[in-house]
Length: 252
Length: 252
Image (tube, rainbow over all chains, first blue to last red):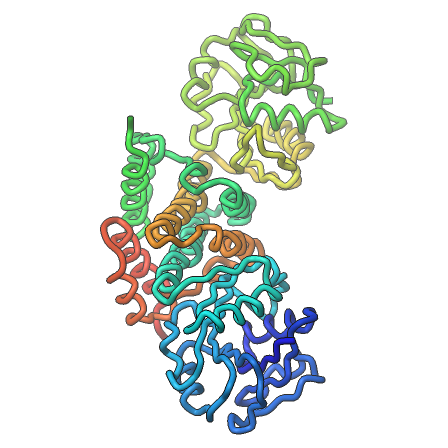
């Protein structure tokens, strides 16, 4: 049985607590949060404290906190025997104080309290200072998810940049599409099934193989026709991305 | 009962034929294709011809053909009494010869023979020369799909540009993410659930509300850190899109 103390009461803490409850080999012995917000969303049989000096003994302390408060909360902690991990994709392991055994447990998904999700299907990137702690974290993560990856801080940083493209930038493409629809009184929902299919397709295809459209076909006539209909940033984006796609699919 | 002749044997023709078979109010009276390719995929009880001069009489003739051959096939047709429609998102209605009653029946989805799809959930954009034909096309499209939209050629052209952003460009963001993963020995599948969720989220949220990430937060430190890790086109794309996102979410 792995004993866990969970610090935080936001989106990630919520989903971790829920998932831990349904495993047989993890015991959530305590929750900490500064103001005990969202208390009604958590299992009331798990003791809660708002006092960092009253953290119970555990094997793993999970800091499911916002990036900007991880270091501060970590500094306020008294000595703890267990492994201390944060759940951030953007922060290195060294944001945690070096007087602790340190690690990272990063769920690679956009988690929200309002959104049901099966954590078993969410990939986890893990990292720890020692081989023993790497194994401990692997044991914990494998209880929560079927997809556990060991990535070091440098790889996790690159993964985070990749995720900006995969999630933030692709979502902004949907925003641009909606802007154009709005301009011409076209209901945006007409594009929603296409958007869903775009995401579904790369679940089994490589994105390079799923690519379609005028830029991939080097169809300069259509590209010019489209550019003439666009202005400002939409035009700049269309131009740069069409060029990049054309370059990625060089003619034979 | 609406009598239909279907011209073409590719992805769109395949899905239309399949969907028409399952309706009660459409009768597919004949198929035409130049070489009768994919014959085994179509209902063998529907007569097929490779001769444009032997097209049977019908209410609607659907040209489910590649953009570049629509005009040519249309010109080769002898006089027909029914309504002639093409299925292209990129072509105006006027690519069809004006001696015919003309229309457009455009399924807004990336259709592939290898991919099962329920056409009922696929939005159709329709257009016709006359109100009577608009109604006829509405009757046909409503048998095939629960989501039928009347768009004129100009709107459909704008929709096509929007779809380039929503589908082609977002897919290319996945390609960029995979490039970065590959560079740093990170398995791309770690991002697949995030990508699927990105598409799912905008099924019920507006993309403007679904946006997250450093650019939306105006987090210049993270943006600079990311830019320093990128080079070439990835860097240019990151820069332009972060700027565009920042502009879209002006600080109060």
